[in-house]
Image 1 (cartoon, rainbow, N blue to C red):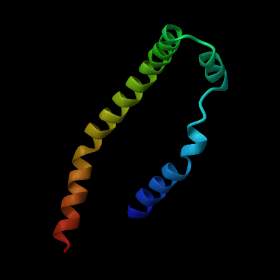
Image 2: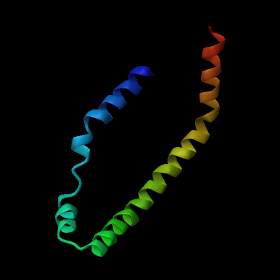
Image 3: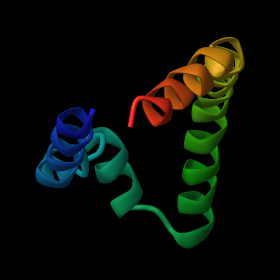
Length: 82
C-alpha cells in the first residue's frame, strides 16, 4: 500500500507542469478579455465542471459506504496479528 501511495504522490508532483497547461482556446480567449468577461468565462467553466465533480463525489461516497465494513475489518485483522 505504501508503494501505491508513494507512486501516486510522485506522479502528482512530477506531472504538475503537464497538467497546468489548460485549454489553449480558453487561455487565448481570456487573454483578450476585460475583467468582467474573464469572470464570466471562469463562472462558465466552473458551471460545466460542477456536474461531473458531483457525480464522481457521489460515486466515491457510495463506494466508501459500501466498502466501509471491509476496510474496518481489514484494519482490525492487521492489528490482531501483531
